[in-house]
Length: 426
Length: 111
Image (tube, rainbow over all chains, first blue to last red; front, side):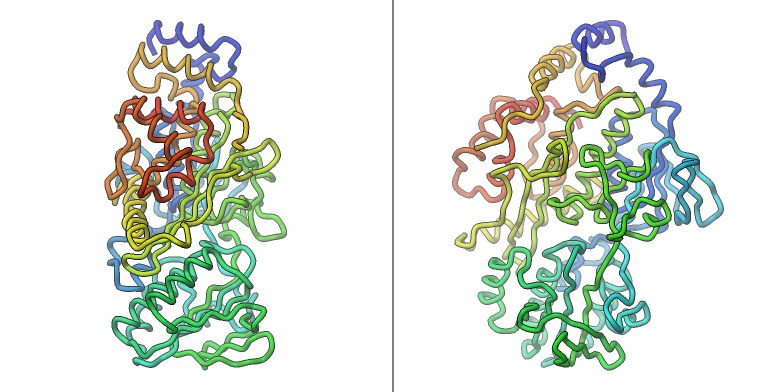
């Protein structure tokens, strides 16, 4: 840093702690090590924004897989609108930016000693940790739905082999078959996801197996973008999709994956040809190991920084966190990753971070040229995360075809941009 | 009614950045702390691309003039032009000071 700039900052920044001693701050950053566990939307973004904000920082990204398949747009893959490769991303950009990338699993995190133990035996010391654990399934929380059952009745709620299994089952299904989806209540990844999936499976079936039916058995009484989805379903798919709410006995109480049947709370049995279970969920298991989850199974965080409310020095981002009113979305995980990165930069400098600001936008495709969206702008109000009054909301119900088409195009644009932002790929 | 500005120091910070960026192009403070403008601009990248340069169907916003950006962002909030989709729902969450900060940031940002 040249003398002119230092003088200028010192002069202009008088009274602002964040501008104090920039030389010292750089030195601290240069000697610090930030480990990021998890290479999805939250972690991969945090790593790159740490680098963007601090060229000298030592950053290590730990992610078991050499590639990451996104849940966003995996429904387009199921519907035949996207290739597998197009929703798969690697970490070349991270490496090129001087971020150490280790393909191993984090097995243990000691928040007091600030150490992460990896599956290959490596122990990493960190000054600050970013944890982006994603979700895990609560196996057995829905009777009959354990890990073995998911081999026959996939959840496909973590993109990967489960998604490919579900697609192969849809392709093998006879025309006239029934695709049944059981949908959990409570907190789960991607609130509009089940309904976009129903939409794009309907697109696939209408195109290839038009006598087939889709039955949605819901543990909830309402759902995300409900009016918009139902409008689109009727317009595009007629009566192919039947949605049964909890108050109409839609809540599934028991799964028999071998028989491909589900039983509702009131004892009605439904037979599926392809059975998809969107099951109860919790924070990814490494969050438990780090001691950052509470009795809900999710992770409480400080809303202005996304530092754990329970373990200092560990910043948790993405679907694993309790961040309502922000939804569990890739967009939010990306936004939270940036906030955590900025908070860490400030914390290493002994400064307070600038106030947090977040956005969410979730596009869903109802059909190839029929997009809808929900958006929100969020901030920390001093006590909790809150939505900016007057902001956000869903696409208008009365919009015309050109509006729906524009949002389908913008959805694809969003995917290209957030992929570039997160992984440096499109 | 929009919430009041959360951060009374914003204008002072922007004033400081004005001079800092004249002295040294780019964000002179980026290596020390992350500015309020950078924080505000963070989520924009998710649709408009890293540093406001879009690889896809959503328009790039980097390098537009500050006046143009201010006018467009304010219009999305107050009187959205025909064809507006999600941007009006976003901009209703930002006050004039925040719009000014975003406009300045994307007018000056370097990829």
